[in-house]
Image 1: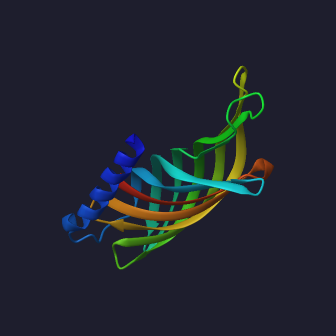
Image 2 (image 1 turned 90 degrees about the vertical axis):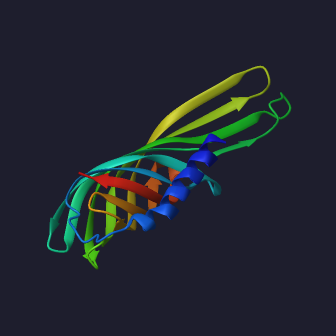
Length: 191
């Protein structure tokens, strides 16, 4: 319920923000911080499950004319979890849960119309996954960190001299046949 309330709060803030827009032409250079929320689909062994991702990010961008390039990092979590079984000896309960994800990478983009940055990104990602089994008497769980690569594309819109909205799609490919598709929205500040 808390995650749904957070998603609704962010969505209402995003919907109300265009009313705050002003002459947004400006620089996309400098340090930035942001909050993100969106859709998360984890796929493994032919199956998939959908959920909500949420987290924070930071970066530093350089701008030369209309070209922007920068470094970024992000820490997200997800509520993606799938379970089967009834936690009995005859039908043990097996669960798989996606956990935190750490990303470090770079991006390159182009400013369009003075207030919109279109960009592509790529980098390293490390996802935490947890598997558990419960037969009603014994519960076993194990977590594992999986290394991978992430690629994505997005748009960032300056809604003021120091604030922006963003929308992004990205794909992550991890070890052991695990992959992720994510679409997100974000709100951030540039310093």
